Each structure stands twice: as structure tokens, then as C-alpha cells.
Length: 170
Image 1 (cartoon, rainbow, N blue to C red):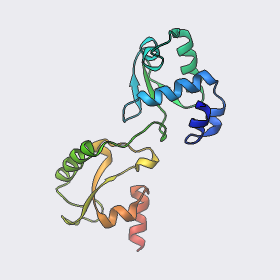
Image 2: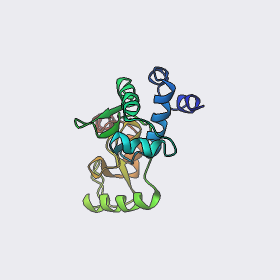
Image 3: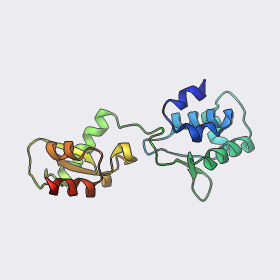
């Protein structure tokens, strides 16, 4: 069952290489990561979060984590206690409306209500992901910019460089 669920929205080549247990762990990790795709915990804590009603040994958790890492689905930091999903859309979610609204106000104020791409002040403004969310960009303030509606629609999920080159040609 888990195999079918994951295959709908992940790169199936990487998923096909996993054992059933590692695939289940990946699915459960995806359910517990934060909006940046990270989870900080020791294997024992991870075991209790992902398998609350079962006792899984640290050795098994570490083996499954290694399997996920070998298939480029997760990364560990150097101390082995932080698990990060590789920059893909796996497990990443957009912020809820109330948190997004607060972030947008902050970005608009920081950018003085001016489009970063054309310099237009005021008007119909939107908050743009500099590196598009669909390309692995985050909702971090450093990746957000104020854009007029026209520029934001034209940019879509292009990089800033590609967008500015396209804009200069028009």
C-alpha cells in the first residue's frame, strides 16, 4: 500500500530501490518533517515518532536511514542526528494562510512596497519566491521578494536571471 502512495508523487526509480521497511520509514518521516523538510532527532526518538506503538531497534532505524540516504532521498548532518530531505518537493508543504499573510506583510515592508523586478511602487503587489517553490525554493525571507502582479505572472517558476533576460527581449 505505501509503495502505491509514494509512487504517485516521487521519483519511482529511487523509491523502487527501497525495501518495504525503508519506504514506510520515509513515508512516516515525511509526515513529521517541518516546512523546511527537516527533522532533528536521535534514532530512538525517530523510532518513537514514526512507530509509536512498536519497538524498533536503533540498528534497524539506522540501517533504513542509510538505505534512504544511499538512494538520495534524505541527508544527514555530520553528527547523524539531523535528517533532511533532499531538495525535492517530497514532503514540503506551503505555509498556512495566516502564516503566509504575516510573511507577505514583512516582505512588502522590507522591500518598501516596490517590485524588485521592474521598480514599480505600490499597485497590485504579490510575494514571489525568488527560487520557485516548485524548483525547491523555500518560504524563507531570503527567498521571497515583492513583485507586481505582471512581473510575478511573467516570471512564473523561472530563475531571476532567465526572467530578466526574457523581460529585456520583450
